[in-house]
Length: 138
Image (spheres, rainbow, N blue to C red):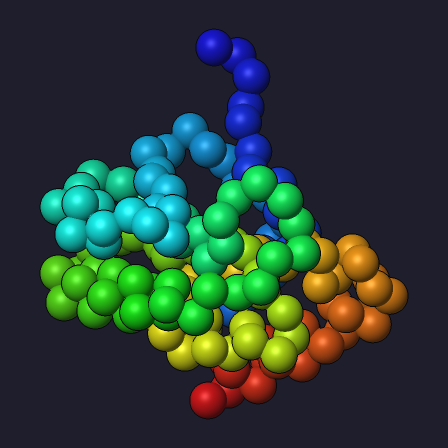
């Protein structure tokens, strides 16, 4: 194989600490908004990451779908209850105005693109840092 694959994102937080790339050579799964969460749960002990899409994939700048929070909560409860080593990543519609909801629901990794790169990048990253710092202290 030879090539390392990375999942590059606008901004990722891992247990509220930042990183800017993630290797994809470990098994992972993606849940679209229309995916029945019960189809994924039996495999959580076999994967290291589950990606919850909080928009319909295809283009940036979409609004966050609030019902994805229920999926994150169900995943977090199951992962914690069964002491699994599986991270929950959320991608789509993440903004400084809703990122706390995703964290509170149980997300480990947060992806934000348009909210950072569509504005003053440094200012937006500073806003996210302040939110993540606050959440890590609570």
